Each structure stands twice: as C-alpha cells, then as structure tokens.
Image (cartoon, rainbow, N blue to C red; front, side):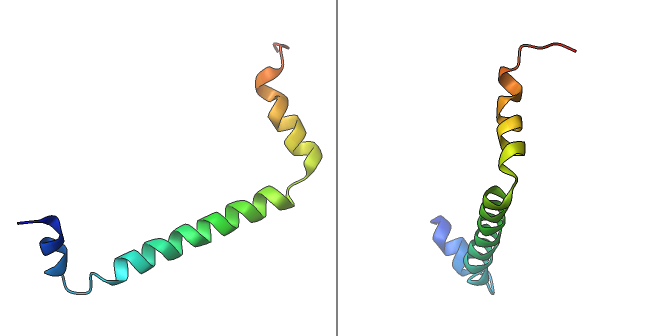
Length: 56
C-alpha cells in the first residue's frame, strides 16, 4: 500500500497543505519585514561580530 492511500483515509487531510503553506508564508513575510526594516548600522555591527579579533 502506498503512502498516498494512508493520507486519503484520513478525514480532513486536505487542510494540512493549506495550513503549512499559510504558516510558511507568514513566517517568510515576517522575516523579510524584519530584515528590511532593521537598523542598517546595527546589522553592520552584527555582521562583523564573527570577524572581530578582540578578546574581552
């Protein structure tokens, strides 16, 4: 028996692809909004953290 047959036997399974697409879309839009609306100086500072040779 193929996997698709198991999915067809579940009642209301058609909502899962739509729900997962909705969750992904909301997450992607939120991440893009945060990336484009962040302070550029702070992002420049954060991007240099791994390259700093200073030890505290």
